Image 1 (cartoon, rainbow, N blue to C red):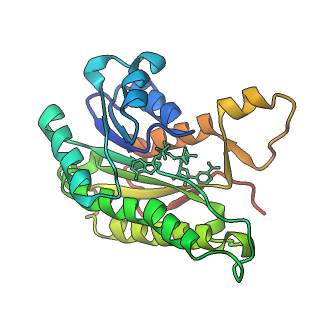
Image 2 (tube, rainbow, N blue to C red):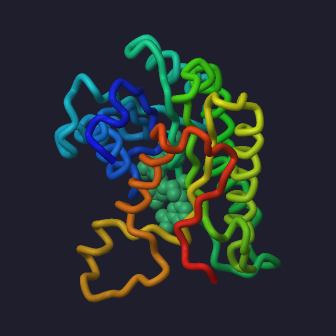
Length: 241
Ligand SMILES: NC(=O)c1ccc[n+]([C@@H]2O[C@H](COP(=O)([O-])OP(=O)(O)OC[C@H]3O[C@@H](n4cnc5c(N)ncnc54)[C@H](OP(=O)(O)O)[C@@H]3O)[C@@H](O)[C@H]2O)c1
């Protein structure tokens, strides 16, 4: 990705404060984009531009609860007021519940994951739809999904089902865009290897994990003009098993 591939684009990142978010923000900002992140922790959001070396005029961080549809629409409106438009939306809100066989697991896990992994996708895509369409061939939505969505295991039923629902929603979102217009795609990983995990376990091998840096690069590619013709696709960054 060269340093000006995304010059002038405004890209919103939902869940910027997690394991992957800061690396994605840095990758997009290094390619020239203005990044607008949300999370629930304003302090963390305020610290990010300095940590990542993103100029203040190309960064916007505001705490929003993405489970609240009105607040999510308000976030989009605030970005349009500040930057004049939004070209991209990267959905990185995550979390996990599971580990027990599905006939023993609490269905409260499903309720929690449905909110976190499905409702936040619904709220953000509905809120930003008009902006992405208005951005035409620069309009982008990217979801980061899990291999579990297509290869569910018994002790991960709620998580796999929620990710599968988020994928179907994303493909339906993609279906609504005109040829040559905005796009929506899915990056698939099994698990994310963050710099912090590497630091904490320098001797551990993570054979099935995808480095966060590689995921950030894939997202930047999907935001670039090189991916303008790619819509409604799953891009797996996983081992082919
Ligand atoms: N980590 C993995 O191994 C893995 C594997 C496959 C797919 N993925 C997917 O990859 C993406 C990024 O993963 P990640 O590990 O970076 O995610 P994460 O750290 O679990 O979550 C990202 C951020 O989302 C925020 N968030 C949660 N609920 C929110 C809400 N209602 N409103 C606003 N922000 C909210 C979290 O803030 P709080 O800290 O305040 O909750 C967190 O900072 C996710 O979509 C995840 O499902 C991850």
